Image 1 (cartoon, one colour):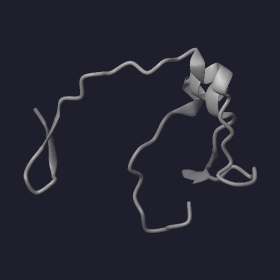
Image 2 (tube, helix red, strand yellow):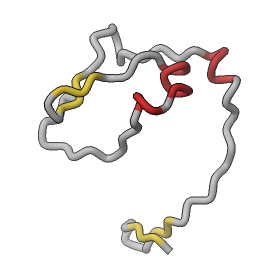
Image 3 (cartoon, rainbow, N blue to C red):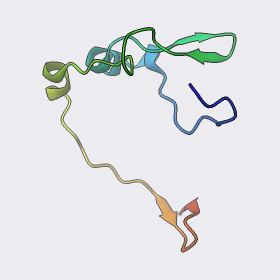
Length: 75
């Protein structure tokens, strides 16, 4: 939110993912195509550890391959 010329690298549609909202609280707000930061202190995220325990990590296959120069491509 602090770097105006930085492109979006990752995005989660919080409005469609109730589990994420349960674990990290309310999402940032979208207004006119902009993501506005949460007004809570710090990073604006509180982790609910009890809720997080209901969703254990599951490894997933990611078909991305990195080249020697660090670029990625889908295999």
